[in-house]
Length: 231
Length: 248
Image 1 (spheres, rainbow over the protein chains, first blue to last red):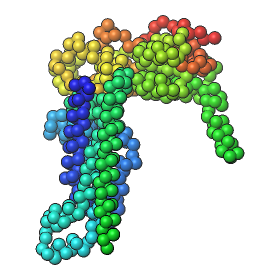
Image 2: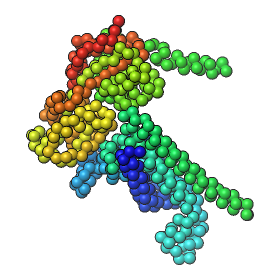
Image 3: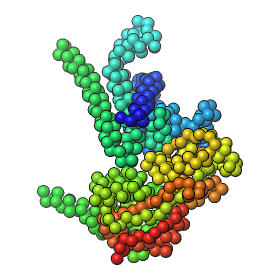
Image 4: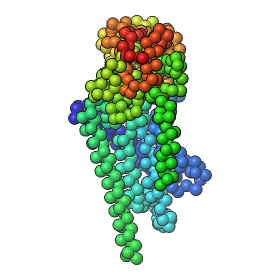
């Protein structure tokens, strides 16, 4: 593997890691709210979160390219604060990846949060646990499987990102040149041996990820069926 | 059983290329609008007879080599059509450099004189990828002449069309595109600068016929004619030798 390809692997891992971390921080409260809220607003927010599942990445890439432009409010604000454009930067890719992977983080957690027995939470409240305590000592342990699946899926999905990066990345080595772009470049320059290496690696990685998710799901299923047998 | 074979017959008859001898053209994105202008005027052929697909030359090449059903390939370079011939794909005598592209530096918000811009500008510069896009390679060659006083950060478009979009949307304030795009978009001449063609290797755009059709022959014959050559010139390209492909 060439030095530039190794560089692309590192950028990809950084992007996937940063996306997963950011989503853990901002996505978790959103998932909780969507799962528990009775508000009419959640009827709108839930489909909005799922939009990246059905939209072509070019739609998101196109809108981001427009939004990031220094002619627009967001782009010009960013340029004034940081002195750099959002397009063609790691931060720009991170914003794109967060939007793109949002449903992959929220949905598994939302399912998990919805299934938590309301009585348990009320019991904890009666025993004097505050909201933060209830969340970290009760909800988080009960939702381990949801967190595992959400973070694994988010990470893997970001590694597989292509369309948005192609549109807003600018192919800068060490900053926005991710694996899928490096692979595309190899195909364009007819370097099929290097292309095979990256494509095969991504294939293997994705397959292993899906096995992992399957095992996590199955693990909890056996626990459920074991529990049912014990009754 | 009878129903399914009927369905297959119906589907086959719906395929226009089988029904009425359409010519399927794969064209490099930068030449698309010129090709549109050309096929509107090909004598004895209707524009509807041509089915145009666009993409980058490298991607089209990869598709053709894997069996994509194109009849004619207008590439933005000379390497891909030649590589196809090396793989025994295409009609050998049909290889032809149909146009030569011209590079231009576009600065839509330019207020200072060009020389000041070259001396003072710092930051990002959009260009096509020099590893595989001909306009990108030319841009890198011009930059290497020391055009700008400061080292600039290149922002790479996948092809010259994407590079144009980076600048058009304002995300990049400066970049190398093709003259053809600027003419197409009606950009005012004071916003772009055309480097001397000697500063970079000629951007030769070549074509090959993949499968001989009457549509390809008519189109190539028209591109060889005075009227066809004028359309190519008007769109910001220069022309060279005429095709020796037998147009009878």
